[in-house]
Length: 76
Image (tube, rainbow, N blue to C red; front, side):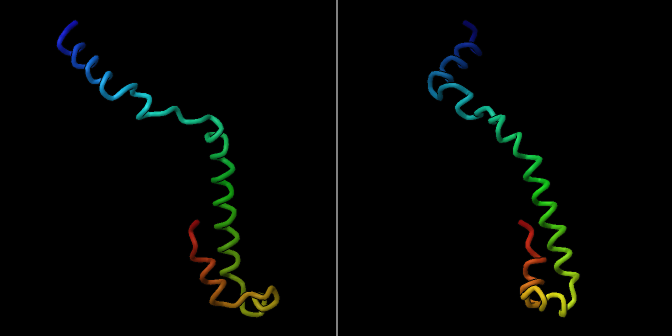
């Protein structure tokens, strides 16, 4: 073996497989990404619409101005 090969063999023996540090990304998690992004965008749209309601409409749905503004500022 070369010095590099010896070093790599020693390193792998010490730390184990490199996949222990870089596990494969589960495919099911990839399938959930689009629905998550669409959910975030939908909530953002709803919060923006809530922020635009006047006090009369907010009162109709039982939400105060402060609560509507707090909800509109959320980013999650």
